[in-house]
Amino acid sequence: MSSAAPLVASGTTRAPTEATADRPDANRIALRALRSLLDAAAPMDLTVEGAPVHVAVERLPSAPWPARGLEGLDQAADGPLPRAVRLRCTWPGGSTELLFSVAWWQTKGAYRHLVGIKINVVSTNREIVWTTVALRLRDRLDGEVVPVPVACWTWRRRDEDAEEKFRQRSMPLKLAVERAGLPLVTPWNMEAFSIRLPDGEVLPSPEEGFRRLAHLALLKLPFFLRGHGASGGRRRADGSRPPDPR
Picture 1: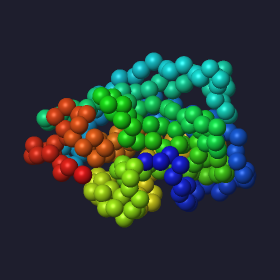
Picture 2: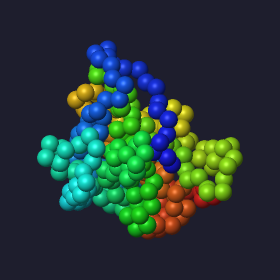
Picture 3: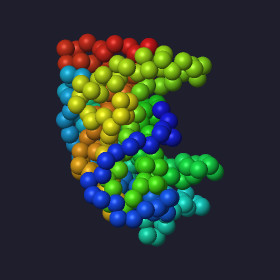
């Protein structure tokens, strides 16, 4: 699951008004969009592979800004950092907690300090969703609506080189995403939400973007934990466990 996934092409809903090779406000727009997404978190009920899942929401205190700041952002103008959200997800026979938070690349390379959203399983701290939102915006134009994709594949084994084996193991998850009706922007990426430039508006809405991410995280859960890290494991509506993806 790489946050350096290739950019995806998309149409626009408004004609571009100006061009920029690398817009300096990409990180600021991404942070603004992610703030509205996390602020929109609310209790919800989902049906995940036939199982009813109730999602309760707890907002956590804002994390401190890094001591040396973040490139393209100013603490006085852009702070505080968006508050992380912990989800308590319960279903017949099982439960888990997921943590949604804003994160950034801690590197000296081309992605340095670019902000994105990640989802971790609280009990194991296992990251199951990550996408670098600012990366999608850096070479896009004012007036564009830019999709933010999230990968619909499973983990890659360290000793695995065969792309076909990786895709075969990920196919059950991809099919689950399709059954859920989550929108695909490429064959292997769900469109979590879109961002309108330059105002950072989240489309179709922050609430819908958050719902899609929560649904995808729950679909990914058994593939990444392989039956561990969730109380009781996720079960179908008939009480049976989903098949082990190994």
